[in-house]
Image (cartoon, rainbow, N blue to C red; front, top):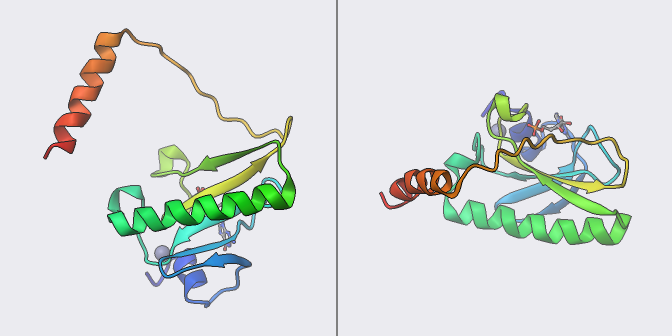
Length: 138
Ligand code: 5GP
Ligand code: ZN
């Protein structure tokens, strides 16, 4: 996509600090560096979000994420690692080219994700699950 910043990075039209590359994915340092070692694993092909990935692309991203996550762990010895991936503006997506954040975490690092649990009754879980299963079966 001509106007996509990550497509430009993949095409080497703008610089990025790359840590890992294979046929389908490119992993590079996030310019914002929420914590040192913050990496983005992106698909090389332009895909706006998770919904559009084929199985090979999904598998390739998962493999790169696991490999790079272990390298981040070994290099920075963080207390933890958050894997974050946003689809759509309300979910926090700002670059509309599919990517996963690998974010080393440290106690008290100021990163917050509020998680307002609802704990509905089991019947509700069944109701929600039935809707999803019906679509998976299509
Ligand atoms: P999102 O909010 O879509 O999940 O994440 C987009 C991320 O891309 C942000 O964390 C932002 O810092 C990063 N980013 C935006 N523009 C560039 C860029 O030109 N180069 C790099 N390396 N990262 C970028
Ligand atoms: Zn793109």
